[in-house]
Image 1 (spheres, rainbow, N blue to C red):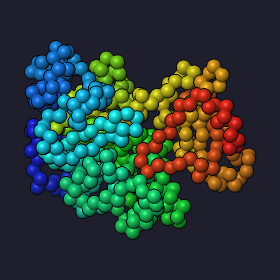
Image 2: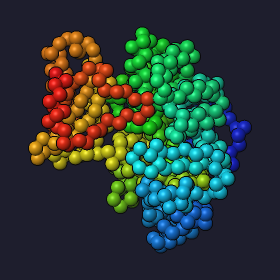
Image 3: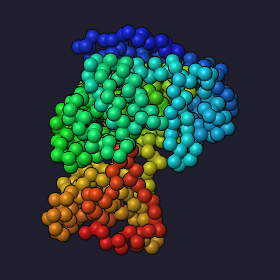
Image 4: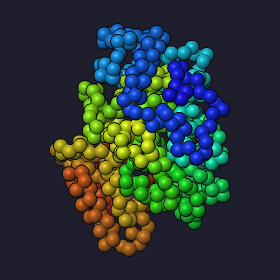
Length: 475
């Protein structure tokens, strides 16, 4: 296998032939059985390294009776206890700032990123110097698979701060020897300026979140700029579900007249493009020689069969600084063996990407509801303005679902009949998909704030049902 060692030692001068579909043909197209044998060997190396370097893993595995040298097959590996985000946060609380799972000296930490901490203690991601280089090579390889090449202009429309996604895209693009435009996002008026810059520079590709791409298109159109004038060939996304939801993806494709590729796993798992589509293959490939991914039963954490649904469990195969070994994502997806991948890569595939987080699921009258399902319904409605809020409320003894959606100005201009028709259609379509009744409230398109980052649309406030329904803003 090309340049596959632990620790990684990539040739920074390497570049495939421009007409090659693959960055590393052997690694990407090898027989899956042969790859799995190599992965088992690598798992043993990574586990021994983590056991020797990190008290976190040593105690966890000793308590579970796990010997790193005893992993002889992937079935053995399924017995290794999973790691949860709660455990990582506790480790960093007890061993500030990076936790007792940091496997390099603090002097080797090259970049520090993390979570915002808006819902609790922030988590610090310490990335070693060698890992930063390996991540750049991994991201560049995936971006090559998307069809990007040296010299292509890549516009990065994501926040440059704690969020590691934008930085990973930047260093991957730099390793690819692309033209990099790290424009960023988040400042007042920045989206309108992004539209002007993109019309002027005509980038080959755009990176951000799906919700921000929709917001960017809305702002551009409001300023008299057709997003098709950007002449993008590709938009690739991470950070939230959406790019694999057909109605959302199709809406973005129609707005920009460009291809859409979904990618991303977890910030802790950087290189987060270890799950990513390619130029020819929809959904997300699991680039197993970067990060070994199992789709597991959410209770037993044993792998489910091909075609079955579960939660991804991730293991770094090239990280040395804060290696994650069986980190459970609590996302929801299903996988196939990848034997029909149009691009010829022999990795397993998530044909519908990541649906959302199991944590985000809520129950209304006995039915499991995922926000991504509501996103999909609304994005198929003619007249939908592009933003909504999902409000879980209480009417007496029963939980209720209120969807507050905005509508295009032309719908309001057509009067009450058009608004009532849109509301009725939305309620009908939601009830069919969700299996429960949802009340729909329609508001003007400037009512619900847009986002420059990840959309947060669910509000669980079961004590405000009567006041929300009594505001009188809907039609």
